[in-house]
Image 1 (cartoon, rainbow, N blue to C red):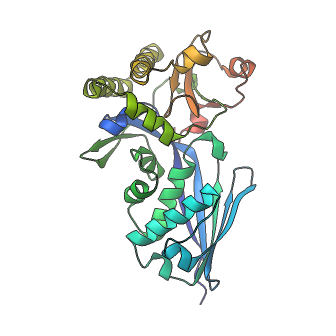
Image 2 (image 1 turned 90 degrees about the vertical axis):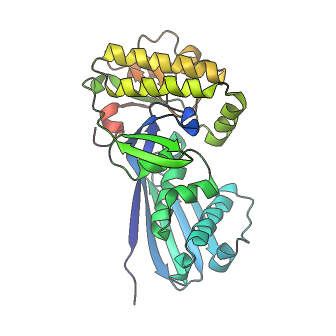
Image 3 (image 1 turned 180 degrees about the vertical axis):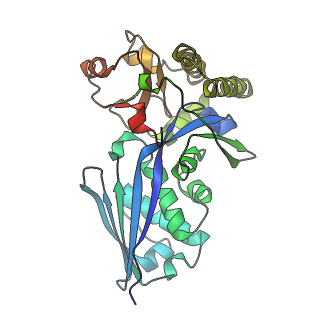
Length: 308
């Protein structure tokens, strides 16, 4: 008897406040995106997992065959680091739920991104959350065993509204919050043409942080005030304050200092500094400005953030 196709979906993510410091217990304001990734599974008798991944433009960027017994025994080896990582994730999922890969003799799996995978909106976190749903395991535990990180991106994957996220005794605590400022028409997301490696960025942060408990308190205060923002001016002041604090902690210039010193609005890095997306505030559509600087991907808030 042929089993019905299973489909899973997870949201992408953007981190508005608390980047890096979320690892040390800071409250982070995170926004699930209107973009994400789906995973489709069909069972068969092939004895393998045939895995195909498709980018937003429908191009097939990964096509790999993983023998089931090899994945279960963690003996798969490949010079392709993506294939190797995928096999590791599946092994760990099966380790957490030993009957996961025994449900069939073979699987055909297809994943579909609705955003370009180099955007940094959560190609890995949406994959982890989808596989966790399929395997019926804890996605935070699966993340811990495969990528590490704070887990805020996993929380975004399964929530359809803004969240406050923090770690308490290394356990994730998630609170859904209202965040619909009346100036969203002045908010734009700009892609910096570079996907940032989160693990490298986190290692850099851990090597530099000093007196982090005081910094965490400051970031928490800013996050609370941002949630209560009533005016664009006040919101911009808080973004600038957050950037200044993290610039000192990371010993790095802000994105505005680095790329856009003549921009009239505020610029806030989202997640790992130096790549992925920034948030820009502007009284008028700033697309022409950013394009003149070589940054062609400018997305209004309403088109980027889920249920905004």
